[in-house]
Length: 110
Ligand SMILES: [Zn+2]
Ligand SMILES: [Zn+2]
Image (tube, rainbow, N blue to C red; front, side):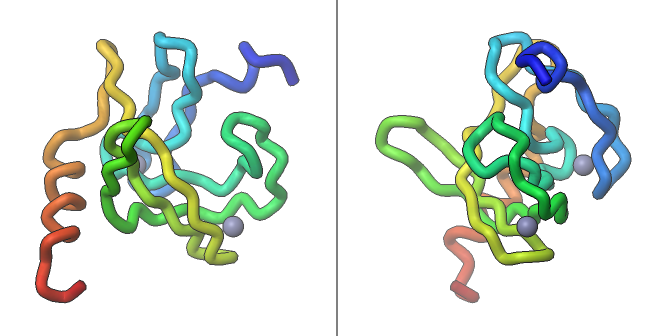
């Protein structure tokens, strides 16, 4: 597959939202509505993983160079990956969903 074919929109398998591709050239790898992702990459964008399990958003981390990142964990195999938060003019990540994840960071449960 070439890069253009990989960077297409998709339907979220967790909440059913229609997700449009990013316009800034980077890969959209999680749903902007519920923030769930899918285990399709070994390295970002390579689509080389064979697991294809859904990846649950765990919490938000601040990365020194990359800014805010969502930590995803695969519900099938436990693989953990950091994904940058997408801010795209057409469809950016849902601020309420991000705020809910961030509040989990400071919750006493942790
Ligand atoms: Zn979703
Ligand atoms: Zn997996």
